[in-house]
Length: 116
Length: 116
DNA sequence: ATTAATACATAGAAGTCTTATGTATAAGAA
DNA sequence: TTCTTATACATAAGACTTCTATGTATTAAT
Image (cartoon, rainbow over all chains, first blue to last red; front, top):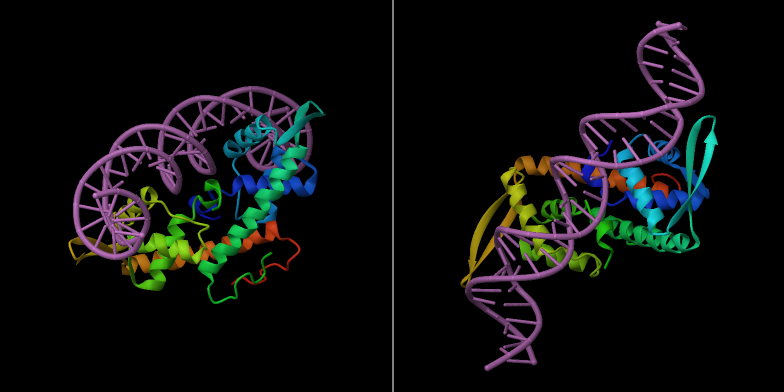
């Protein structure tokens, strides 16, 4: 597990990137997906996830579909057309940002190496 | 300039990394250095920088030396021995974190490619 | 003479995420 | 069958980080 501070600011990009690749996902699925993808190094807490998903829905970035799984309700989230555009921009910005950070933290490597 | 949210959580790692490489730096120098290193994409605000430097000093991570430049006071910051250890850990964690993020955002690349 | 750059600092507000808590169903273990 | 764990949603209060705005003062440039 990474220290909390280091992860700040990455929640939204991660969620949107996952939705970009998976068409639709439900909250719990997102938490598990991130856990697996990061070998337990990042665990999204529900207290952070659900309010953010609600906010994204209110902003028109995602829309929801409810499904009944037995007696339980599952709420799927997917990107709206506008959400897809926003996500593409954010993902590109994030990749650029990581490239810049790499430049600071691994200055021995050639600039842009391994990045877009 | 990157959007504000994306930079969250990176201020401390960046500052400590710079101090690790430069022995000692003063506040304004840090802001300019980050500006140059990132081609104006990241500009550390003074309202974020100074309180953080003061906090790091209170925690024993950095110590200060004041110097008079003409009639102006310049306050240099440098890592304490303990600060050097902490910084090394944090820098390694950050590089690991970036590698994990790259794995999510550029899954077409081989894992660990270009990272430590 | 005025503006921009250098150089420090703090207060209040905004925003992000954590911790804690709550509800409820389904599956698996004892 | 009972208890625990996993699944699945949700919110409120607080901690923490960073921004915006403001303030002071010296030096360099126009």
